[in-house]
Image 1 (tube, rainbow, N blue to C red):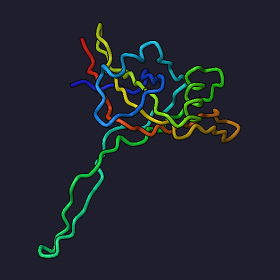
Image 2 (image 1 turned 135 degrees about the vertical axis):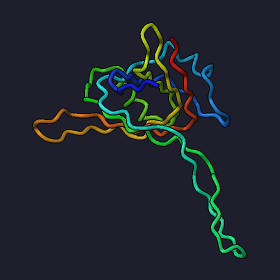
Image 3 (image 1 turned 120 degrees about the vertical axis):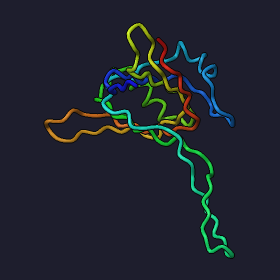
Image 4 (image 1 turned 90 degrees about the vertical axis):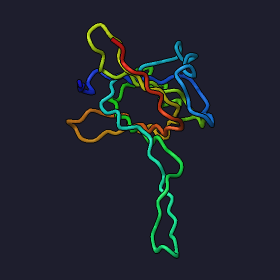
Length: 160
């Protein structure tokens, strides 16, 4: 088994892509190929992945709470970037925050083996926030964005 660092991972924003009632598959993102724009100067990519809501039932005769799985949420991916007002990816991210629609996102992990291709993650999300952070004199100004993931996460394995 091989592990990898996050360094070298890349985040891209695509064009509008509406959420749907069924899971996305890789083919659903084919139309985004010419639209992907890298969001540069990323410092933190947060986390993403399904979590089930807890549904409880208090049984009177058993005196026991039963737990069931409800709806699934892929969560909120909190992105931190060094603020770059000229970066096309950051400009697209800020523009997406100003709309009410979903956008395609793509994460290309830094896990390619020599001569191979890296794995990828693709999903649909709304940009819930895009806020600037200034902090202190010895700080880099940041762009903090929250991606409200509205789909499953399509995983594409690395290939050798």
